[in-house]
Length: 111
Image 1: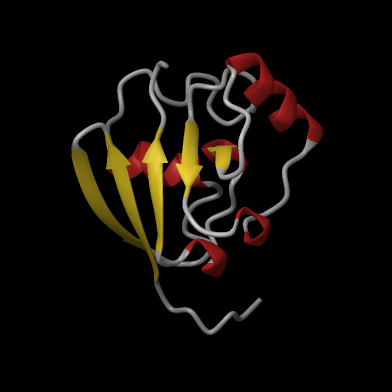
Image 2: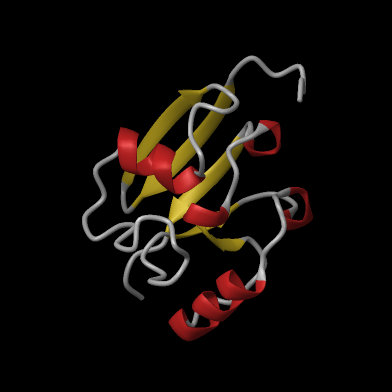
């Protein structure tokens, strides 16, 4: 797929820290993999992308309909964590593609 985007830029907020990340389409299999590789976040992504633990929860700004669809397992995990709402996702289930470019991602900690 050629979306015309050579680089994907994502602003990431973790607590009071802000990071500006740049990646290429296809460089990471998921948003969680990008965050795990570029930013050390304590107790993040414990199940390594299986969508079961809920420790990689994020809020993504903008229109949630433009981010890849949510499957049943992700919705169930988010409901168990009490994190249901538009824009709240498991980062392990979000594909890093041109639809993520220019968005802000806030990592949700223990709430």
